[in-house]
Image 1 (tube, one colour):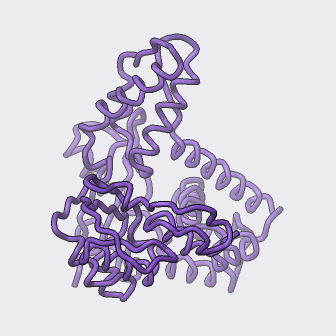
Image 2 (cartoon, rainbow, N blue to C red):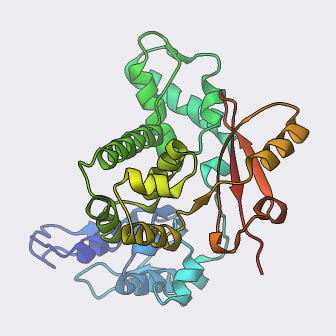
Image 3 (spheres, helix red, strand yellow):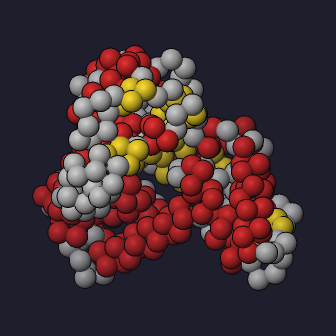
Length: 335
């Protein structure tokens, strides 16, 4: 039996001659021959090895394939379509992809944006997946009012595959004929991450965990993400009304540990600062004509921000749906 993964890929693409390796019990054409006078689609072309790229280049240039174990070439007439989720030009500049192969492939380049960049496609794709599921399961389920509009608001970082999974999950979870709601994988992960951060905060506050071993060391080992550290700091500052000293005290960090704690936050972009509440309240009331509960302001370059933080930086307001709360994001001007 042949255990060379690259050799197996070549066998699938170009074919094999009987007896060319153990297990090759018969002549077998490859996909290029099978696609003669048709189209062949190769996904994730960026994952191919340099050796395979050289053989693909030869097929494109010569319009011939040679089966493994043979010495004669076989003509093929195909339309070749390839796809990649990485920038092949950047990969070629880094030496990870043959530039001559890229030139041969780049006759017609179609850039497909992520699903969040073409939300108008979501209803069409969703209905297509639903029809396929109905046909396979001999059912007549339908989308409830509002389902598609809610679905179109999602970002779908997993693109079409995540959308398809979401439709299937909603389809099989529906108790009746109406498909009404679905919990996206990203939402489930976000909820799980939130619960984990809540647990960390409680353990740190109650002294069951040490910040340096439970958070700092694990972050340095990349066992936990920067986003979770930011979420922990955010949660802590919300509970201390923006006071770092109170947060450090709550985490049982004093003296030198407090300074070390602040250095860690600054180096990793987790610094937050409370802005002059009266000034912000006035700005909001003038702009919105209503009263708002104020949150802390996340900033970059905190060392350079003194008492004129509000006057010197633009404020971006985003209202959280379903609550009378405004989060501020403040970004320092570039020099």
